[in-house]
Image (cartoon, rainbow, N blue to C red; front, side, top):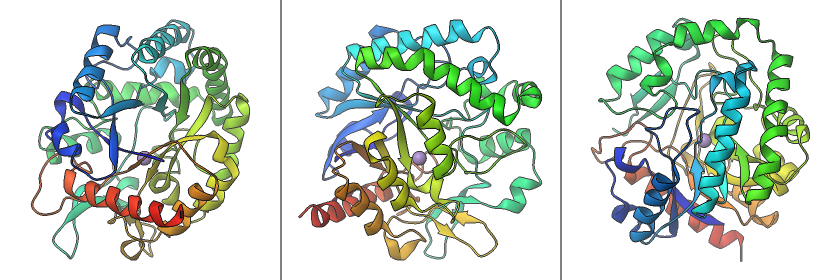
Length: 351
Ligand SMILES: [Mn+2]
């Protein structure tokens, strides 16, 4: 297991030297967030990213995310050009030592929450998902709400360039059925995975967050059965999974340790965090320890340890504690506590 933290490059208020001081963390997971989805990541920028991280004594072997252009997800003829660009980005990343690329195949919207800074009784705040709120809002209203709440920081998956045509983009999906969406994913994998194999890059798809449909859009990666179906679309170790306990775990019907055991040889990267289910189906992102949420964290880490997992992990989102401000879900303090907690579990379970 190699412990990492996500870092947002020049857009991140947290300096690499602080991440370097979190015990057990040997690398960061990062991306070139300023490059619009679909455009090639220039080699020079990939090299500069690697050099900056390495100079801080950290590795950068996992990228999160290389976003997929909507034309690929929609399956329109223009997709071939975007797929070629995607492969070129993978080639440039392989040249700077990247081993794993985390990505998602969610239409238009990445993750969604109703609240970015929901206050908890202990005085911390966290991201919250209210089913009632989301059912009664629109994507535009949600984007405006994030813009207002996020303190001027671009959120991954809710970048302004992605949102400027949000209504029109969602409209384009009206003619894409769930089965057509599976076909579009298969088309992408068939074109990209042979190159990932050649380049030594393991593709690791992130589950849909939350793992149920939003605004009538299709969903792929939300259950054990659908993960199996996705991995079988292209049988290769390079067609793999990012196991995100918080995303899959938002559905209490998903048995996370069982999913880990079922697909261990295809899991290249893991986001390990806890969340708290509320009786009405809402949830919030809790502190990492078992006592704070609804997931049994030793059971999850044990499933990885027993499978001989040697990939990358990171604590996922954290709460904002100790008056820290910054990017929702990505303060330093609570994620550092999460990393230390997971490192402790790992030490015990590997004995
Ligand atoms: Mn995740």
